[in-house]
Length: 179
Image 1 (cartoon, rainbow, N blue to C red):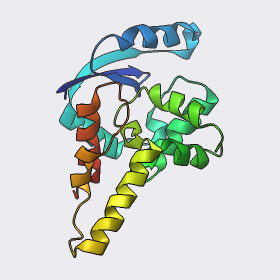
Image 2: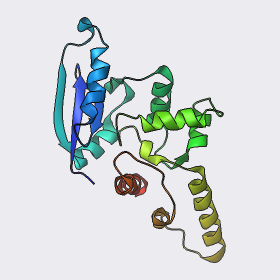
Image 3: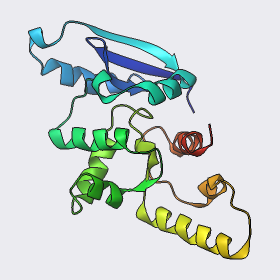
Image 4: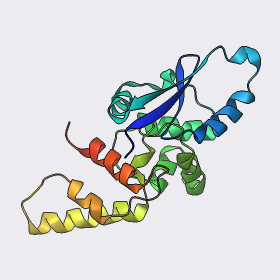
């Protein structure tokens, strides 16, 4: 996992975070579509992963200035405001009042400009959620151990992630660990 993240702010509100500068082309394109009087200041700076994790626990929706369609913003807001737990793409689509829109939800998740802050890393394939339930049921029937499910993480597919599967698994482990 990277230890430095690049943050982009528009008028003091966070708009994007990435592990490298490739995202600046995407970000610059979004800014170029705004009128001159819609942006006063732009700023980029680096933060550590530790700071990113802190921001994930403290930022609110109104602290952000996001660029995306109304639907994308709805998906991102739903993700940001839901409890930090694993969710399938189909469950997220239902939470966004669009149960038939699983592909559209998956596309919005993939375009999330704020890794960890908007916890897209917690969205995993439905088969993975089903596998976790299956393992839990089998464990409940055969053992008294009722510990953490983190041991399951290495045995299920977590899906794609822009910053790699290791980073996704690390973020999931952090969110699912007792703090």
